Length: 514
Image (cartoon, rainbow, N blue to C red; front, side, top):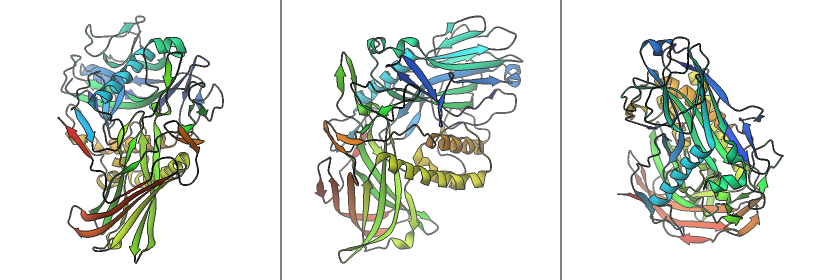
């Protein structure tokens, strides 16, 4: 396969080239205390394991095409950008490191590589994707599978545990796909014996049409993307859980454990049409000490956590601050993530930012769930505007949060024209599906939980307003078509849970790659 690190952006194919049932996203939570699995969607828990169909593959059968079914984890870089979904188990990325950061330990290349392999261990050890041909003929499989290990269950059924598999459709084929948790992963002891360390994983099941089953096809057509989330409920004697309604719900840590946050960058960039964009990247570290008992170790940072702030822009005149505007921005830090949360920025009139004047951006973090709900409302408001432009939309893939501002400008998600091996026949469908999936993603009511306290290592405190304040004071020295020249005058951090400081410049951060 020429490109198996594939993004979420996909396109519709011609009628009868295999139609895939859309079910939103699949979410699975393992409860070791009850040795059970909880399946849930945006609104509620589900009584049955997730399943969906791929059918009406007549055109694909006539063209001699194969259906490629792929299951793998998301891969994230230092800038909270999802590079794509990996289906090969090969961490073939550049050796990069973040330099100039203030954290005690760094997530260098080897740390990121180990997490990647742990993601794969969780998938291969605990997830099983079953494919059943509901037609009148036996399930047709190539003799050689270059990207997966197939377990033949019967003449019409097979299963595999991650990677990419090929099946050969015929006229009248209807495939039923089911994703489930293996029973051995529902037991604490056997789970620990497997050596699994990751407890919160994002990934996807992607379906493609391929010209052959060699794994080297230059012709792939994307059919569908099904985002998945697999988490393990925290063990009660190790990590107290929030919102624990019983065995029918997924649970997450009650403490928010990544307050050591800094400004990564502050910039003002011209957009044209009399607008500029305010961008405040946050430098975060979702790593914290583990608690162990009977060879089982867990930490709150083994789970994704929201990182949202209320940002306010002030003009400073003769020592007085005059509020210009405020907004919520941020993102989601995946488990054990270290790097930048970029957010989506905020547009204001260019006339509000004048050369020679001094401004202050103040970023306050109050309650993580409260801030996240306000941010969701902002995103959903923008999605409503996009929907009005596009008409009724459907559900299949998710863009990263920072791509949202570009959707309504281009009506086409970034990057799709440069991806080798994929054919996008109708780019507008990518926007339809990506926007709808993002709406689905932001509408989850079971995450994030209500956090009762904030912790910095072993030191914890009750959450009160605000728990963290960052301030950047700067003067506008000039501007060009690409950016405004900002002179940083001071950078401050105030908090009751992490050390405060004042500096005259931002941290000199750089991502260095070999």
